[in-house]
Image 1 (cartoon, rainbow, N blue to C red):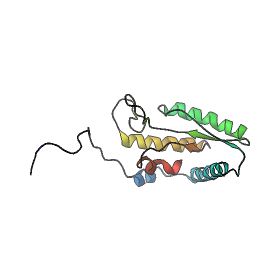
Image 2: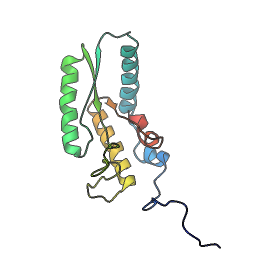
Image 3: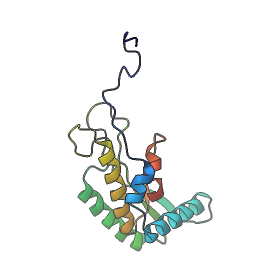
Image 4: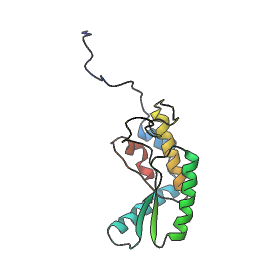
Length: 159
């Protein structure tokens, strides 16, 4: 076998297999209440965007979640505001786990869930699903930004 110079993966530091999206979804299935909230919030958002619902759509939340407890505290406060302002606003929590425009430093919870540069993607994807489920359990719909074709396979059923 020709050993010659390396010509593939020149800029790849390491490869780590990820669990299949179906495996994480099996290990962390949506509850009926979560599925209903996702479905209903998608329907309400569509109605607002089509002009069939006069309320304002407001998507609010942190730049990127790095502290689970702080994120859930935020979601709890947003749940109370949804109760208070639901007739005027459709409040949706931005629950984002990546920092794609950051060239140096922390890359987000999915890429670095331990905040130490360890790049434990499988753990990050698992944590992201857990956090989304916990936010939904508080009665708060979620929104995010998907920038690659992989992440939605793990998270889209909770957005």
